[in-house]
Length: 277
Image (cartoon, rainbow, N blue to C red; front, top):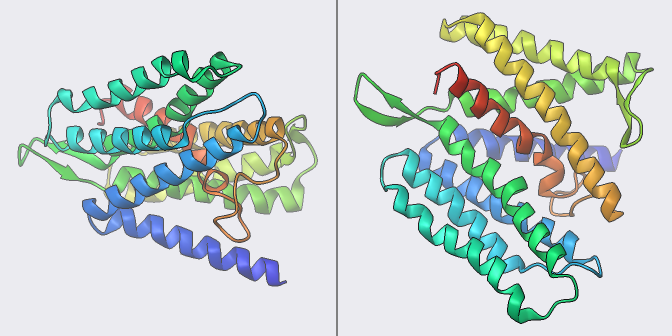
């Protein structure tokens, strides 16, 4: 019971933080998600460095990821030009060249894992900026628009809630037993249905195309599920139960944000394909 209360309180606080970051103002949005980027990369590097055949530079990887987030932030609000990405390219070059001098036993492992921190964590968080900032033809300026990032997280939370309830009540057929024995097809379908219902409600509220919103929800749910399974596979490979312990009852930042790491890029592709962004 105590663990349930701890988990519930932590979950509510974390959701409140995400909602505040998205709904209040763009500065808080930038600060919160840059911090989440830093914590997630640091956490990931800590897990990787626990392996005897891997040594990645946690500090450089974390600084690079945070810089990429703010570079996207500045670029999407038209505050800076494309040259803002040059320092990030220097970071990537450093991560490659530094292995020439460190004399590590497995430099290829270090290269691969260092770049994975940027591809798997830094890039998805940075892409969140493209959902949050929209160009307005009316004002001819970029405005902070919480609707799409908020909807993405609401779809993920609705999917998790529906999957948990339907999985507990109806779950019999395992979705991916090799990686996550507890997930069921019934739970995944239930989560998807709840997310679709939420998307319909949003489309009626904002008075836009319902099918586009249903498609948005489905993309988020499917890729969010793959993101969850990806992190489960990662933890199995690393032999850990949780990615960290910063969130009591939930584990680490990656444990809470795993679904979004694949859902965000997929949502960006979907919305750009429909010329919504």
